[in-house]
Length: 170
Ligand code: MG
Image (cartoon, rainbow, N blue to C red):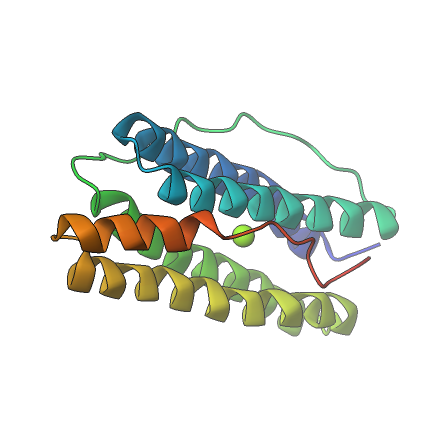
């Protein structure tokens, strides 16, 4: 069994990761309607990764004899006014998720819960990658997105992203 606060934060995180998936599906939905199928693909893959994150936390709680409580997933909170908006909202969201992971880590550290800290090490690294990917996308969009040919090339690049299962196995 885990310390109550740690278990509660991880249970909350399951919902947050499913929300992330939902948010990224909304981005995919926006780009699909705009005819940018590469951007759509990018965020569909991203949504899949977020579901994996949720399921890793789900599995971790069950592995530690904890119960999981599913709560309602909120409506995606974003205003997608142009092709740049999802990218900026994505970076902001990943920075927020990093703060959530850090909060769980702090609680695990406080409880001397080394097992949970070891699990979270993977997520800390993952968040570094997520923020870098989100930030790189914004840079590329700033550089090439205002030109039709540039946007076409960028869309083609993002179309090539394929889903791979997470490197962490529980
Ligand atoms: Mg995630």
